[in-house]
Amino acid sequence: MGYAEALDALVEAAPPGSGVRSLLRPCAAGLVSEDTERTGVLRRRTPVAPPVTGSYVGGHPFLPDDAEWPRDPDEWPMHFVLQVAFADVPALPGFPREGLLQMFVRDDSTHGLTFDDTAGTRGLLCRWYDAAALARPVEVTSTTPVFTSDDSPLADPQHPVALEFTSIWSLPLGWENLADDVAAAPEAFAALEELLETREDLVEALEQAVAEHGRWSGVHVGGWPSFVQGAPDVPAYGSSQLLVGMAGGLFEWGDVGNAHLFGDPEALAAGDVSRLWWEWAS
Image 1 (cartoon, rainbow, N blue to C red):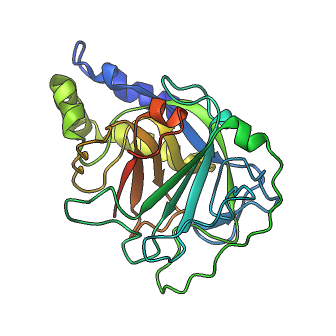
Image 2: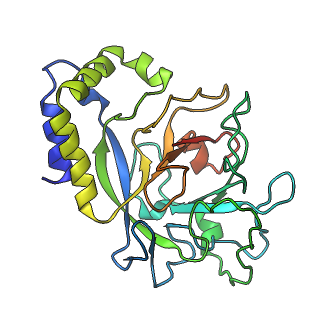
Image 3: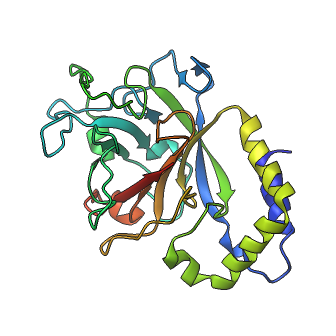
């Protein structure tokens, strides 16, 4: 059974009128390139370097000739996590149709995440390049910094993994959900919670479909977050819209954890990354 069939079986098992189907959100799932090979149980690499303006995890980011490698407030170089070329992403409501989003995080034991009232707003740097910037020729002269921290890099800085995107639908299947989302459809979320508890067989079938796919990267654009611990608080200025979800063996989010980048996709399309926020947990 494939992913789409397994998801449909789960939704069909919900009582009529429960509202579970209304929770389906369009999503673009990142698949590792067909050229990608395994270098270990989880690690992968794409032998043929992806286009510098393409979508990939790890490796060396697109950097225009006048751009410096991002540094944190202490002037230490930050880790490059991934970049998403929206021209590669199937159309999603409200999301950009072109442009490049990059994500960097701080080089420390928590990957820059803080746990006070600044949580989600520190340790992160995102860059946005519009189509005009991507069209200009770039000579790759800068190199990836050598990190001195004992902490493992989030993504392999030497070997990028190229991504291809495909359209899917998703449900909120995480441990918890954002309070704003639940408040918008409390009956539907309650019905989904009961469904997940009573039809574990269908949940396992969905998880198995993902595991057996073979090219599932754990990266997805849009859709729902899947929190492995408690749901975070949305910053006062922030949007609860998920931009990018990141999980799986391409990353080192603690012990089999995952991460989420949130923000207003329409603001992103306009080049505004000032209100993006994030979380990760394991």
